[in-house]
Length: 276
Image 1 (cartoon, rainbow, N blue to C red):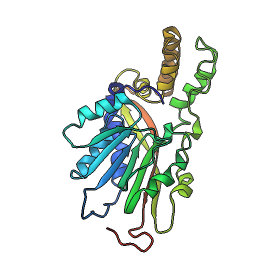
Image 2: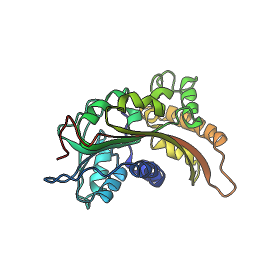
Image 3: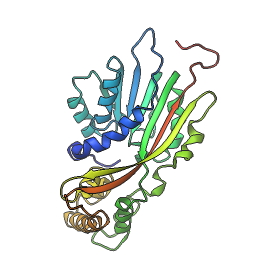
Image 4: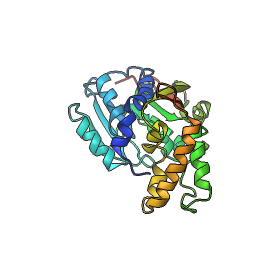
């Protein structure tokens, strides 16, 4: 996993959180437990921008944000101290719920987890009857912002071969229908779709600023001990992004961004048992 910078990530917080709000709108209300608060997990919570939406929708729930980055968790704990949410370090490659959950969500995280589709069954199995697993992932790995980065990393430059295998390919996520075999099951309701947002970014080199908080992190990490190579890569990439994503006359930069969404809800009864 790359080294994360919460401040840089949150520079585009409104755009990054919008997709999670759209995902959450498709999550049905889970059955209300009689003897406990709702139990909700936010996988890959980052600095807590998605977790806050969960606490706003279910203010009485016990919400836990899980993340691999100590920097992100520190920021989340500080920013959401008023919500009652708690946070814990977890590696989603191996994390398995140790208690039943009513809702498990993930916002733009699973693209960093190779083979994440094989984790979905374990997470769905932890849902109570009527519970929901919902996630969204970027579906733009063929977009210029990624394709140009990969091409530049593979080219000759002062970075040599240090970027070999560092960046993810177009197979980092599945097409919407590709998730169906990992989510569908008897009695489940599954909803899969995609949306392409047209983010209107502001500021100089806005797309570079965006990816500096996300997709470019592995490159920045790999070249962290070679400032000259890091600067050379960033400058070359900046020039290519300016051409691929030109700013408009009013200074905004249109940035198309495709995302893949999945929501699956367990049947209200399981093995003939009623909802508790």
